Amino acid sequence: MKNFKKMILIDLDGTLLNSRSTISKKNQAMLRKLIELNYAVFIATGRNYKEALELTSNIEGLAYITTNGSYIVDFEGNVIFNNSIDQSLLAPLIKNLEKYNGLSYYLSSADKIFAKNKYKILKNLLLIDGIKELFSVDSIFRLINNYKLFSISVKKDMEKFVGQKELIIQKLYVMGNENKLKKAYSELSDKFKGKVKITTSGNFNLEINAAATSKGTALKFLSQRFKTSLENTIAFGDGNNDLELLELAGTSVAMANTNSNDLKARADLIAPNNNEDGVAKVLCRLFSEELP
Image: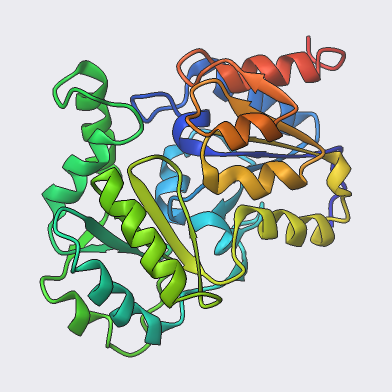
């Protein structure tokens, strides 16, 4: 197995991606250079593998921690970790969510998204992460990019659908009104304690994964697999689903655009926001002696 100088783990939305859901040329160039210099660069995202792969398709040599650590793919494209939500929990989770009018959700596998209403999901995704105006230039670009990315399969009767055999779901993503999400979080955390892991990547969503699964547990797994100490890792993030990752990494970097005070408090460094090449600027500073 190849020995790397360091492991670098980078979130996508709100971190490596700008508000148009694209990676800037400066961020792309920085990652390519570090890969060339024998640094292990991992994308660490709540998105599924298909989305993450397509968003980073013009950068070769990456590995992927997807759906918040549930599905990990190495540098050769091999799946080295796969932890799905217990299928028997999907129907009761959905039944509880259906009680909250105004909340929408989708189920995510490694390569597909299952939702009751495709266009409602896309609209709601536009309105999270600080995009306040539906028809702003950034939101239109975001809509176009996500429409191309999302392979959404519509399932009108979701409870019936999740009863099918061999359904492998890594994540249940919930979005909508902030107050309703807080109530849903409280209820689900109580009812499904120890059975699922519930985090958030913003004020307007919940991300539900298998128990004991997070970007942090993924970092521990990869640290052992690639024989790299945690002190020799760097992690970037902007959401509460990045908190455990930043707590474990040797050098932790929070984005200036984060809404999480906990994340800022934990971070060793604060990067410029995701529309200002924040990732590239911090990496340039950290590796100034090796970069031209």
